Image (cartoon, rainbow, N blue to C red):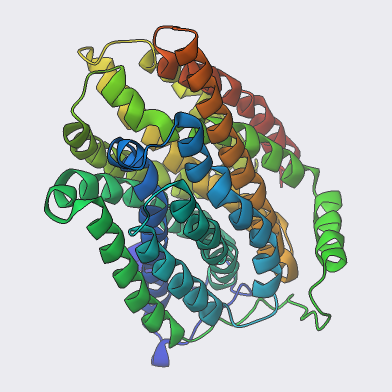
Length: 434
């Protein structure tokens, strides 16, 4: 187990990716991982506050489903996705801890500004620029973890970091259920922004992790051509990487559309808006944390025992959960499987992170990990944002045509489309055998 392999190191010296499979981890490695995970938690709290406060923000600001879909999706995703690739290239060239600090401070200030919104435009503008700040974290953090942890622990490390979405989602729902009655939705935005600024100051003073021994510093200026050249080289070298990316895009379609889940729970499943937020917060944390451990550490064990790529492991999990994912959208809340379905949704979201991003760290050279991770983030977020927007348009059209259960029908459609990811992950795992 991990605890048996922990040894303290003089001065907390940082490790790089040249560690052999037999070398141990330090307590500093684990501490740094947990701090990055805390920042990732805050990242997802900030990101999810808007959709989870939908039942307050939509009526107060007079938003339509289409406008809300834009705010939760494309408005945020546009800069987040575009700058994700650019920030990945920056992370491959500069001090990554400082880069994360700058991004965290920037998006936290804008989160606080969002709390003062009076309408669509005054909420859309800070959401646009929050995307720039948040685009820094994933490529820079993944690059650091790829250098700091050897392959035998890489899936575990990325799985722990990947708990950020699960814990962040759960914490967001906790805030909605228990802090909103005290602070109001605006006060919650102010609070989260203040916490982010404090964490950014701490991150600024942490030491950078040395790059892997195969790292080649690129002194060329960052340009679209240099980014495209790096991406072309990595994708051409590894078809499994390309197929994993495509499979991940299909998987993200339901993740994007699920931004309407809170409105679905209240309008079509009859839950109280505070009650359902509090209930789901526990499912989100439990399912997400367990899912990240299963996906991350499970994929580590799977690749060691079988030599088959991590995406294959993810395909098996998604295939097993497919029937319940469909049934969950069709049954009434009184059925016990409805609650099991809520848990399953967050469990499989957690399982996704370690195998998906672990595959990038396994297959991509240290010199290009940041830019490829940024590319993956861009693709996933664009798909999620577009799916959110299309889902909003579909719901509005179904409402206008007096179609019953418009949220249920829309979410079921995106659930079915996301199943295309399963054969793609299976294929990617097969062709990436060691």
